[in-house]
Length: 108
Image 1 (cartoon, rainbow, N blue to C red):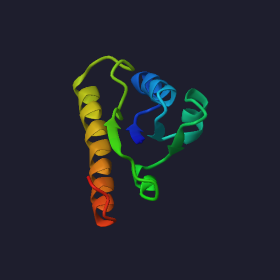
Image 2 (tube, rainbow, N blue to C red; image 1 turned 180 degrees about the vertical axis):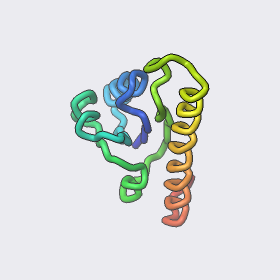
Image 3 (cartoon, rainbow, N blue to C red; image 1 turned 30 degrees about the horizontal axis):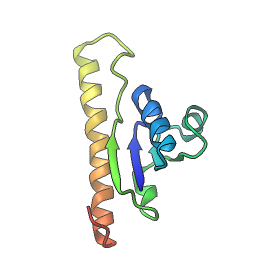
Image 4 (spheres, helix red, strand yellow; image 1 turned 120 degrees about the horizontal axis):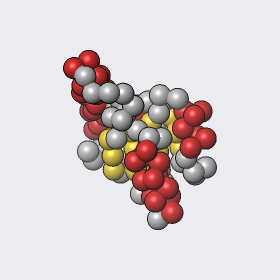
């Protein structure tokens, strides 16, 4: 089973990736910086820049952890906007992936 994780190189994502790899899952990660993500994740994890890059090997499950880190800065109106926008953008990309997968006959 393939599991696609957005935000897989973050605090929660790293631990989830490790557990899934240990459990025998094939793990796919989307990262803004694939090189940095590779340095933090198990070697077995397939890291790419966009969820759309996985259309050739569609995931069986999606976990969306992507977004601005919540503990990186003091909370302010601007920071809250960044947090919300970052999560909406990641979700939109996943919706795009799901739409493409449906066109290939993959069950979404």
